[in-house]
Image 1: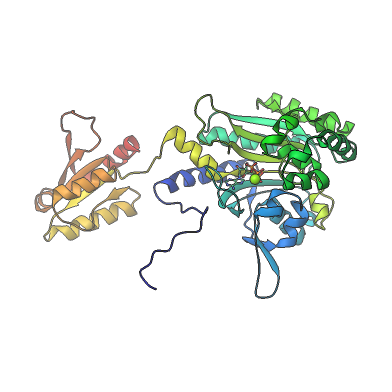
Image 2: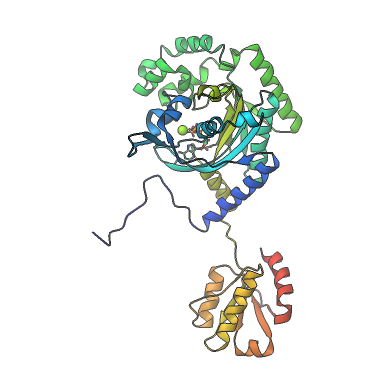
Length: 434
Ligand code: ATP
Ligand code: MG
């Protein structure tokens, strides 16, 4: 049947103007800052073999257990729309033998991820992550570089009240002892929890620490902390990470119970969490970035023994945050040129196009019509200045330009600028009005 409206898929958002400008600003800062830190962009496909995520993220995680968009393609392969970017990056790193040609690799990516989640503010089924991956360095300096990059990024885009939480999970060698303790600890309370939690308890007890289930919260806050169980090497590594962060002036809080929602982490783990004093625009979705070290991931995916550190940020959450503190900012024309019916209209249109091609932000109303209506349009797009261009202006070769951004009640302000002097005036006006 034709004529019936079709809506977008639940949990998947369109990003339209003017909000797109906030996205573009964040993306531009990321591209410039990540390049200065020595990270190069990669782009991998939206889909991968399902097996990649099952093996890397882990079977008993929310992502693999219930959130993946998985389908069978026409060649009978099980395909999954990527729920995260670390496994695809590692897959590409291995597949292209990057380790053979460079001992140290620093990559970043930006793009949509897909998870079948329960939606709320800051939690969607299609969302965008900005992530970085550094392969090849075991030294704590690599952990610190990656964390410092995040901190610099939040600072540069102007997101306030973001707190860095830090923990260490050890290298895995002491994990069996810790898991035994943890199982013993949760045994008396797990009976009252959900089937999911019981499964996690049996198969991957650490996942419980990440659970949001009400009945477990008290136990989680008292559970044994992995950092008390980690090996000497990891302890020394973590001490250096903390020392270096202090040296470069990145503030952090130790969070002894921080474990991430994916299975591949070892040693350093961290999160950046939005914690404002007043209202929280993100509600319970306050974690804007999660990351850490995953020294065994590349090997486990069939690659060489290469340590790695990385993170992923939730761009949708950053956009929400920026809008809550700065409002929606949209770029606006410096000058709006009004046209009149008649032979001069062609000239006016040619002037608009020429100015645009020379780099000025100049607008007009292609529908023409009454000058008053065109001026309303200029006001709607927040143009800084407005001038009509008709027979008089063409003959006298000058424009009468009205200030459109006067405070309420202020007297009218009009400047007369010759067409010859227009470029110089626009240069100056553009700087003042942007
Ligand atoms: P959470 O505990 O909030 O579910 P997570 O541990 O699943 O987060 P990661 O897989 O580490 O998150 O992803 C890194 C970041 O990506 C998160 O900190 C968050 O900012 C963002 N993110 C994750 N899932 C979503 C989603 N469904 N919608 C929007 N952003 C998301
Ligand atoms: Mg999640």
